[in-house]
Length: 363
Image 1 (cartoon, rainbow, N blue to C red):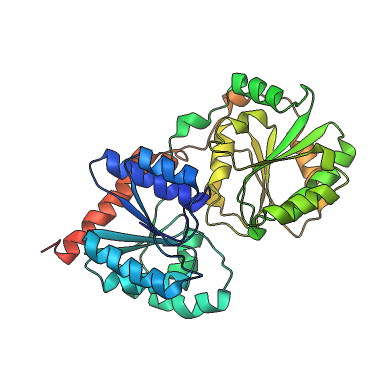
Image 2 (cartoon, rainbow, N blue to C red):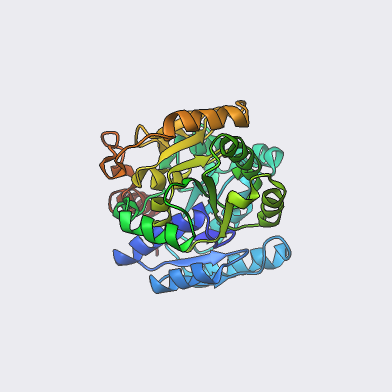
């Protein structure tokens, strides 16, 4: 597996979850990282039996990174090199992988937007010709990178049961965070990056809080935009009711402490936290730019980003401020199987095997 970073984000979750399942099924996995590594994610990987190899930083030592990548792929003699990214900017990694001793090359798109759209448009046309199999977390992400080429949607899967609503965790966490029994908690779990739109999220909460003073905004996540988000919170008239939790190692129980989930992302490959939040029985208020493949229940409410923050707040209040039994949340027929790692893993393994068969395997 080749990734730019190994941090607490969507790609990191997918890489470690699928890698762990590969190992459980008898394979060996190495993750090659060309950027930041969070110690907690490395520890998680090692605990699963995954080998993590830190390469020179792709941004500060580009030449050193690509030399080290080629060396690692040649010396590892891997059957499959699976490159993860968000855009055509992964073209150089695919070229290096094709020129190495790797048998088959896979490419995996995790988003529908990037920081360099012009370069993406130039490079994306070359990507399909460099791949033996292509994956995407959603149809939208697949079309974004692969166009009309033949790709497979491999969902961002996990163990479904761990996200079920837990009344005891709700009580314990709200007590630990000093949240009163009558407080209404709007939640968000996301990397603190500009595309997650935390500035708008805070404005939505300000409008909601003005009408419902006994409300709290809980934001879990870290990242390069943490300083900017913190400054926005400090300047907010509702700052005393906004909680920045930073990176939360395992947010599964955190959803139980929330009362609804607000996710106004500018773009997403899928938005796996939305699936997690719905599994916990939360009503989710989501940017209409987020792929609908993340919708697994009637608790998924898409709202345009053209709508004002006050408009969002009004729609949240109209839907969410009602009493309902979260433990009895119903899901759309057949919607959960795609997110069950034990089922979706077979898609990945099958694609690997087919690609290796076409290439004739290792000599």
